[in-house]
Length: 215
Image (cartoon, rainbow, N blue to C red; front, side, top):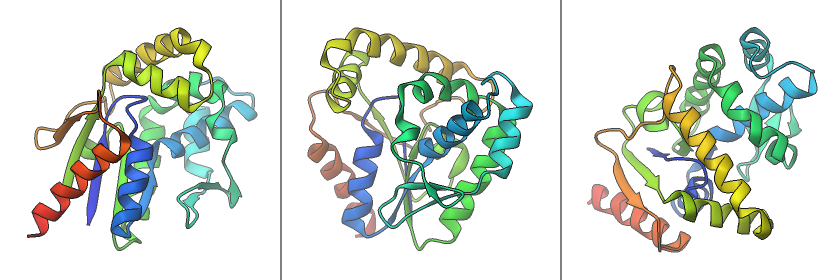
């Protein structure tokens, strides 16, 4: 079984997908972590995120996999927490916009899924590009203000909510307007507006849909 969850930055996809995967006994595939890993290496090598050739070279040579807890491994080494740094966050949209990067990473994502008995995958194009034939598709959304509030709380930066909001707005714009694999809601995806809902509420809604499809 493949369950794909798309949505904009800060909508809570990773947390929700991880819990759904745990509930169903499936692997959790954090597609965003893979692009963050590429971005981290690009920056560590001193390349610019706008350098498509350098970014693609990293994406094609970096070996990415996940441990049993769903945490990314980069050439066998843990990628957390470095891939979550503010510097990586500011540059990941630019790196992931390169078609060569996306082609390389999408191929890896499909290979990971093929080796699993089932996955819950989350990202920006999992329902439209990576797994267009997923058994279930969801589009998790929330207002920009709510996403900024959640991210500020999650990262322990309550005083920086306005800056986080500005970054979310920037990433939304980049993700929605990139030429290759833009953020879109798949026609057959179930949209969930997470405003006013807890993580538990969203997880329960997705699990209800899974159980309904099985009956």
